[in-house]
Length: 129
Picture 1 (cartoon, rainbow, N blue to C red):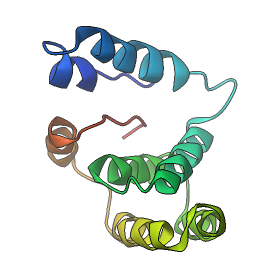
Picture 2 (cartoon, rainbow, N blue to C red; picture 1 turned 120 degrees about the vertical axis):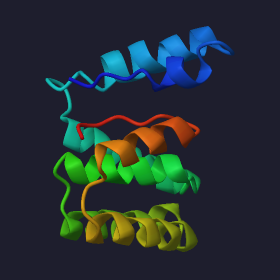
Picture 3 (cartoon, one colour; picture 1 turned 60 degrees about the horizontal axis):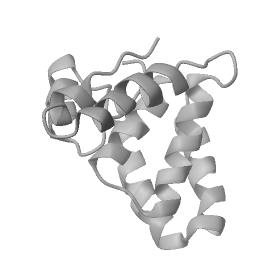
């Protein structure tokens, strides 16, 4: 089960409703509907959606780490991004590949690295780490 508190931790005082929707609805309900779509598949959809928008920031990197930890292999992410490049744009794919290469050639982040990253990212991510 995905448990998310980053919305409340980062925006709870400023935007409590948005934080609640982020933590309870997006990550608490949507990401946990594994009987409908696995975390692996949700990660795949999220990575492609963010890449298509050109959002290759720290939240994108975190979703790539989620995808890796949710079972997407290096070969699969390479094929996914190559396929999406023809629909989303070559420069977007190039930027996504640069981040994906880093994620799949490095080990999984440590607990401290994840916590630091979550505190500093604009949009919190989900996944099993």
